Every structure is written in structure tokens, then in C-alpha cells.
Image (tube, rainbow, N blue to C red; front, side, top):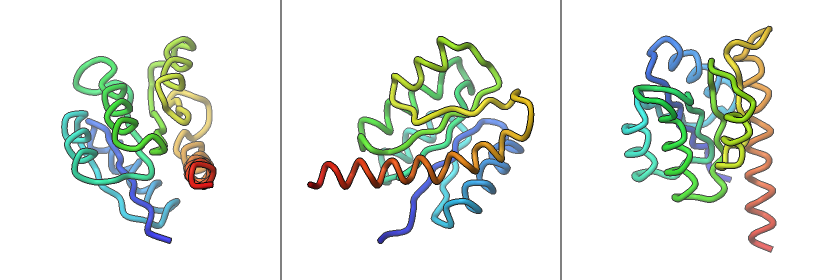
Length: 136
């Protein structure tokens, strides 16, 4: 089995470092980072990722949706976890409909990084199951 490839995207360097740390600790795989949606899209075009963890709002509104779109076009089973401080139920439901596995709210009570740490293995297992079903 190959090493897990993860892309972490956030335009705030401190948050990017935190997300990268959690992803590295949880997946044990290769972590790439991007500080903008444009950089993330370029990386997605160049490399295959099992998981993308991205901020929803970056240099422009909804930049995370562009990252979802690029990742899903490249590989239908790439799992995407969105990170956001801006919660609206319709928006959250929309991101799942767009292809995100789930989302984490930075503003939720408790530690959002712990929630992310719990979601990562679930998302990767979901990817493995879907790939296995497709191969059968």
C-alpha cells in the first residue's frame, strides 16, 4: 500500500502549520501545503492526493470550493475536509453536496483540531471503501 498523500491549504500561515501538524500526526504520510487556492489547484494538477484539508474562505470568498472542484475533477475519490470559521447551515450542506467529505468549524466549542484528527481516518477509510467497490 502506498503512502498517504495529503494537501493542506490555508492562507494564514499559523493555521496552515497547525493543520499540517495534525495531518502529519494522523496520516503518517506525505504532506504538501499551499497558502492559496491557486497554489492548491496547481499542486492538485501536478500530483495525486488522497486527502485535501482546506480553508473554505481564503483570498476571496469561497476559494475552498474551487479547491474541491479541482480535486474532484482530478480524482473522484479524493476526500476533502473543509475548515471554516464562518458557519451557515446551508453553506455547510452545500459543501457536502459539492463533494466535501465533511467540515470542521473553528468556532465550535472544544478543540477543532481534535475534531479534524478524528475525521481524517474516517475520510481515508471512506476513500478506501469507495475505491474497493469501484474495483469490484
